[in-house]
Image 1 (tube, rainbow, N blue to C red):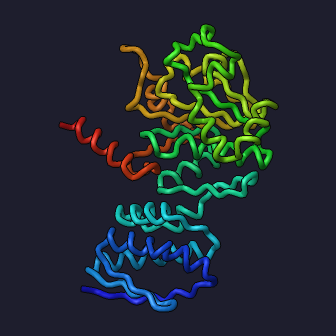
Image 2: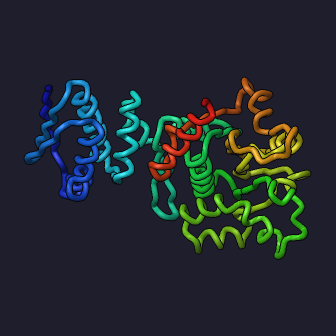
Length: 318
């Protein structure tokens, strides 16, 4: 057994509470994850257990304390993601969580929860076209929307355009009731959900009413040139080759495009090539285009979602 004693000087009771959690739930979570014993007295914390576990926990707690010292607001989910990163050999907890997206309208900081999410945010900052590819729950759509709202608030773009192929309706929306927005809304619900969460329902409605945020099925992008816009194409695995080429060539001056998709969830008719899969091959190596690939380690939904994805992947290999 090995033991390490850490000294932490908390600036406030709030900081101490965030570090330990309600009823010391953060400490209990760390103990159960690494099979160590953590005791605290004043600002001194003692970690006891096997040497490798003690080293990992010591590093983890140093990173968490450093975040709190910078004014970061810690949640239980942050502890869970931090534990996952350390267990997977990534000790850059502070670096990952510090690379956030500030949403001024709600004074909200959206932070990445994995190294791939951090790379995704950085890619969107530095590239005009970014592909985010991976399973559900990895933050592809939410982080893209956060970056779009952030760019809009800093006046880097004048509008946000949200689009998605309406495969289930064959993109023949005329028979559906309502105006264009009402027709396509069910297919863009994940984008709406992210928008409402980031800026609030009332402000989102104002954005939509004034055309600052525009929603449209992918088929309606044809013939347009999108200038001064942040464009998000969601569910891109369900685009055809022609649709993907059409979308990518709509990009105008001072614009960004983020393309998200999950190539394991293709709903196209048989013998139809996915425009996303084709684009990943054709466009690799082109300067100015970035590709970020997510896996089950990046899932940020309920912990069971990650296990479900792993179970399905394991079943494919049987």
